[in-house]
Length: 225
Image (cartoon, rainbow, N blue to C red; front, top):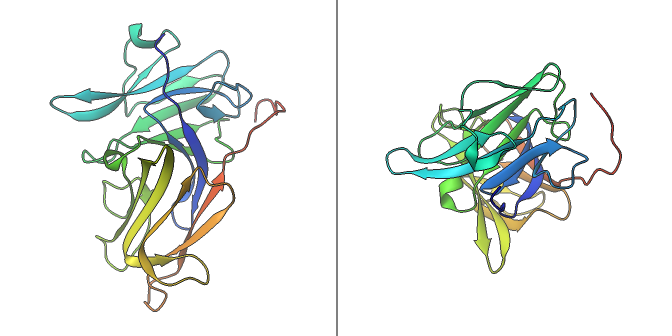
């Protein structure tokens, strides 16, 4: 099996869009949360099932996530948009909402959860892996701005030997007590919980908060959920 690139992760919570585990990388291994080698650590009954998610470039279709079993590159691509059964009564389904972004959404079912979340965002570093939040079909998470076309863009960039998370929102964003801006940046993964308010506080739209938290490092097997 080919060597896997480094990955980083955090937990994301959005008032309207719910919770998700955010995993940054291009070659990611899904496994049980007690497996130190799992880039996508899940709780629940996974059985012996391990999946590899690899971002592959296509001349015609752009970057696309391929899903393979533990055999790695020699295994056939299991494909997107269809649920892949895992363990007893659980499964995962991968989609890429927009052709302009290589970011994917992994939906969990049954007993599976990602530190309490039922979704995992697979995010390649760089502008090509942007996560969009809004109401249009190409968005990865739901966010209601002032207009149906309003959106928030999240990217994770490789900068000065580390990763930096960028949030951009034309309607404005701010940390509690801070000034209204259109761009916020911070280290990824965060070392502590970060809360960012989206949208103009003087508008008639309902306030919305986005929270980022460090991913946990489990040491105890909780067993099937």
